[in-house]
Image 1: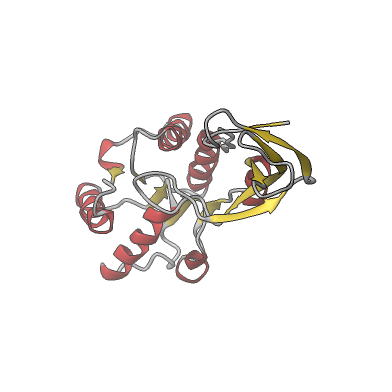
Image 2: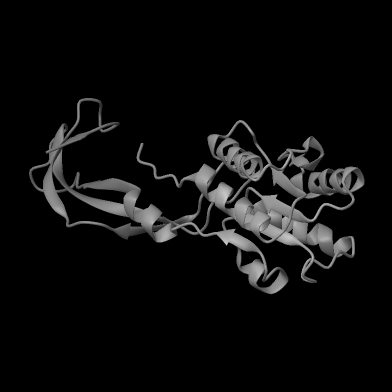
Length: 219
């Protein structure tokens, strides 16, 4: 399987370090699905940035949101953080999906996150941030570059062509880049919507099968 992954730990480290350099010290992390490698790496980046700045890692500032009913669970998670650390001054979100729900929380709780007193950082962006949280610090994902390196080969087999038999047929292969629309579209797994974009010339050849076209070889 082709895949491309960003340096999640380094990106998280730089975001949190930027908050620290701005003077924020009580930085909460809001995350989910710790079993996912991407989320674990982002948590590591957060922790390493605090450690390198000689800031104690406070477990009360760790917020893990379960993905089932996450829209509601983020409320209880952030309520707990504010109760345990009332002077929390910054939030680092490991995914934009959680950040969007947190903006709803801030609004419902009457918290003005744009008054200059809050530090906000998020892995990946959403168009809502430009309007609701223009001061959000963001790790931009190179979507186009990621897509251009995540390539799928599609083969079109013409079973109706002259010369096609029960086991061979003319075919055409072309490589396509998968250009995602965003970082991911759900909380339980990293699922994507996007589009194919041609990446390479058409190649003609012959498809051969030994299992009634369940699988083929192309040459």
